[in-house]
Length: 114
Image (tube, rainbow, N blue to C red; front, side, top):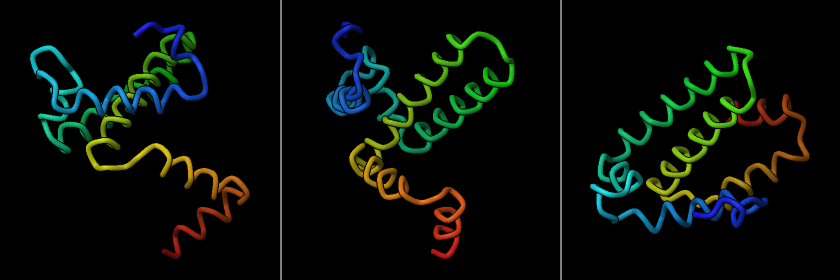
């Protein structure tokens, strides 16, 4: 993937499409295919690991480039999890859009009632 082609607001949708296209790829040549072959548990574990690594980088108070790298890893693995579970990015964007007009406290209180 040429990085210049993918630097815009649609990058997560583009990445999601690439992830979907590699779902049944060769596990010996595609890390994404290998994740799918490992199943939901393995994918979720990787999301957790990447989340922890992102938090560790944030707490180090170091340069932003390493935090950006860990954040990218986290987003990638999260998108793999979405694909595995059949969640489309648009569904997440819709939830975010619905919450956009609510205060964070009000939105959290509404979720706790569900």
